[in-house]
Image (cartoon, rainbow, N blue to C red; front, side, top):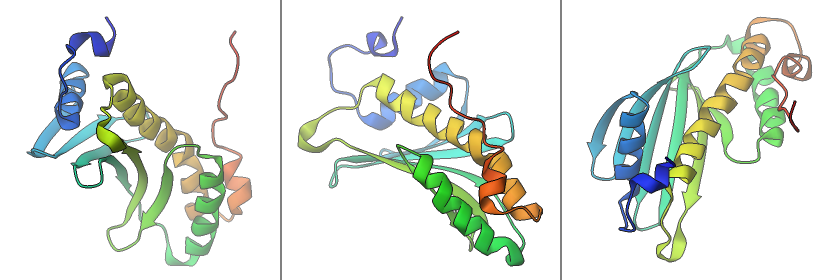
Length: 166
């Protein structure tokens, strides 16, 4: 059964949908408030903290996927160059580094202006894209930070997206 088939035609709050997806996937989550939920999603490389928040004013569902990251100060220029290269490859969302909190961050905002409603599939795709992007670029971020490779060299380790079918 498709995710959307589990919901009737009623308009549900986007965070209610996220909570249902988290329950469906057995992810740990905390409903921080009516308009915000925080989850822990296990990936291959690490556990990612994902927070989704709804802004009725902006009509935007904002997602932030983070993981701890503490590169050496002398490699920050390579990491920032690498972030630019990575973001050139990301179609939806973007990475940034929050040095004060020592967090690598993937952010995305789904704009639902005009009273539009996000489908469960859209929200599930947002979360999946965040985890897949973090998984894809995590090894490259490690190489940028802990080896003498350039950002472009380190990015070669990122798993390429597959196109077509076998």
